[in-house]
Length: 250
Image 1 (tube, one colour):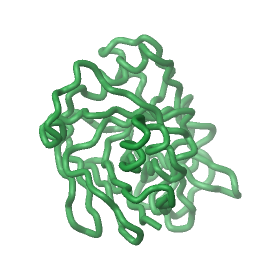
Image 2: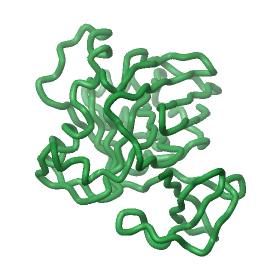
Image 3: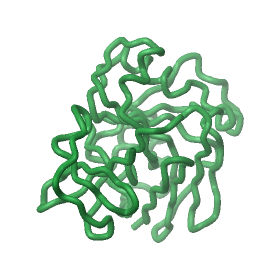
Image 4: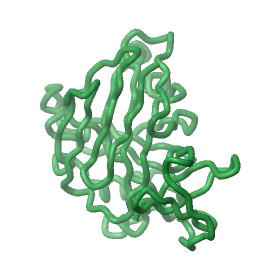
């Protein structure tokens, strides 16, 4: 099932997407999915980021081929950090290049959307706490990351967490291809099977550190090929079985 979030009479709503038609659902998908009475064409609505998380937990150095590219050892446990909810935007919304930085980079990622409160859960239980998956781009001001010696400012600017275009609930995340194109040219391409820690291991680990609430997002790391963007670039993250997230740098 494809779940979208959109504006209806200036109020954010959830809907089910099928054949370019959105069927608005009652309430939200974290409790129960009940069909509503309203159906509309996809091209007639303003899509939003598919979720409004209380927090975004991101994972660093989680692809074997990316670690090899950087000449770094694989981490003994997941490396996690936070991005603020204010950094979230949807597909087709612009990423704003901050004047404080002179070196901004893209990072294509598979994003997990939490569906059920998770605290100190097991790996085997993790799947039951996941609503679905979407595409993400962990935009980073790399020069500020190096200057600060930590990641909060470099990864926390407004618009630095594009998510979308929708949440896919019927999805096997363990071996799918993730691709990033910049101006139509492939820059990143790797299967999620190259992750050091898979999605269920990540949710388990993070839930032992902090409670994950419905709607929270986990970014699962980026493949090799990370590179810089400039104003005017068009960046597209595609994941087999989900779709494409496209954002222009302004």
